[in-house]
Length: 157
Image (cartoon, rainbow, N blue to C red; front, side):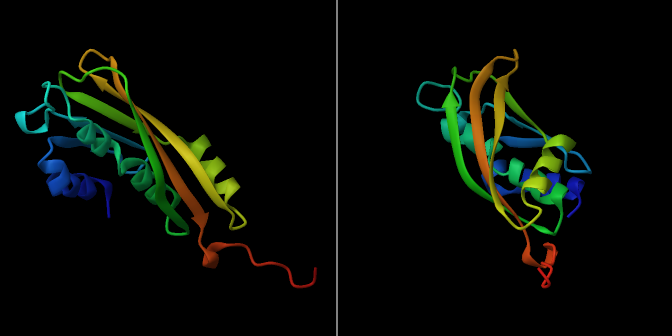
């Protein structure tokens, strides 16, 4: 799916649509994405700040989507684990940016070239309108080169 269409699909995906998450951009090459969470009455917690589950949800699929599409069809990419640290209350719109650079992509390719599995952590800060960190999110991806794309072992030894 092209990135522009994916952005529109995600913006109408019920978990994002009904929680106030808005995907602002996904670059055509799947190297960058940005998302925001608008503070609304239905996504506030008891004390009127961003609900922690919404903060985590706004970041949930992006590292997997970027890595899966940037690496291509020769790779298996799955979410393996995630963690969130709440740094300060979110009292305004918040945003997160995901940047998958070529150095990281090449390291992922190199580590899985022979079919080895790789567990790789990606970090994202969720920041408010003033640029202050509201939450730090970590996502761990399982990455492996598909069997059909692995180098063929030399039978002669």
